[in-house]
Structure formats: structure tokens, C-alpha cells
Amino acid sequence: MVEMIQIIYGRKGCGKSKKLVDLANEEIASAKGDIVFIDDDSRAIYDLRHEIRFVNCCDYGIDNTDKLYGFISGMMAQDYDISSIYIDSIKNVFEKGKGEKVQEFFDNLDRICHQNEIRVLMVLSGNDDQLPEFLKKYII
Image (cartoon, rainbow, N blue to C red; front, side):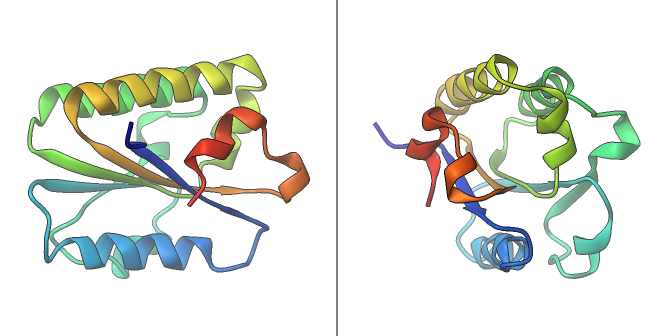
């Protein structure tokens, strides 16, 4: 089965966010649907092509994994044309949803991504020894 979730993982400051922005901008040329970029600040808004829908999740009170899942699934339900969602800089969301909540988030997200044929690419920071086993299948 093709993984619909892909994670760019590495230590802080190694260029993960820039790579994510570059991937989103590159996808515009071949996108078969809408592209959404979710961030917890507005730094990337000027680096993204105007065709990409930028969302600052802090504007919507997204501060834990349950809210993020609800937000993403709501976007999917509202816009059937979404083909990809890029998620950057939401470490604080995952820090509030420790352990099984984070795994539950990924299990649920994986399920709805497959159901709706939507690819999610995200950035997570950490050292290799901090990566939970259940996330290893998503690392690119």
C-alpha cells in the first residue's frame, strides 16, 4: 500500500521547512487538485506560490492533535478538490498530544487520506533516537 502520509524528519535547523515549501511549489506544475499549506505562523506565506492555499492554524485555535485532525478532515469534507496538504511547524501541537494521542492522530489521518486519495507531507523535528516506531514507515 502506498503511504499517503510522508514525513520529512530531522534535527531543528537542517532545512526541512525550506524543502517542504520547495516541494509544494514544485507540485503546482503537475497538481491534479488544490494544494493546502498549514503552518503555525506566517513565515512561509511569501515563499509559497499564490496558487497554494496558506492556512495559519493558530488563527483557528489548533493546539492539539484532536483539533488538528478535525480541522484537516473538515477541509477534506468541504473541498473535494484537495490533492495535497503540506504541514509545517506544528511541533507544539504534537507535544500537547503525547504518546497514544499522536499515534491515534496518524492512524486516523492515514485512514482518511486513503479514503479521499489525499497526500499529506509534513515536517517533524527531532533526533533519530526520538522517532517513535509507528512513524518510521512515513519517513522520506
